[in-house]
Image (cartoon, rainbow, N blue to C red):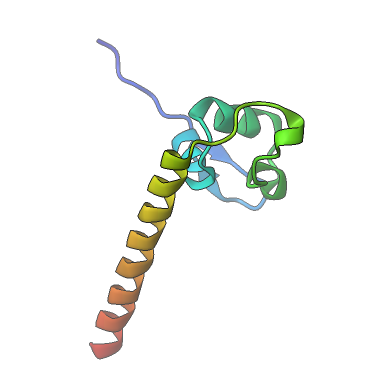
Length: 88
């Protein structure tokens, strides 16, 4: 089998992001994230929250909860690393 390739999109501010990272951050499907990244390279447009007036399905609550949980875990890790680096 061939190797899977993950596309990395470069935004106008130089930030590199994949569709999966964007989907997790916004709580939308990977398809919606891919569409945003192919249409726009402006970070304001790409990271804009879901607008029901523009159509599409609303993000599921479970996906949003998972994204919030990941974010809180990352915040906790950042606090721990800051504490560790402070004490070194």
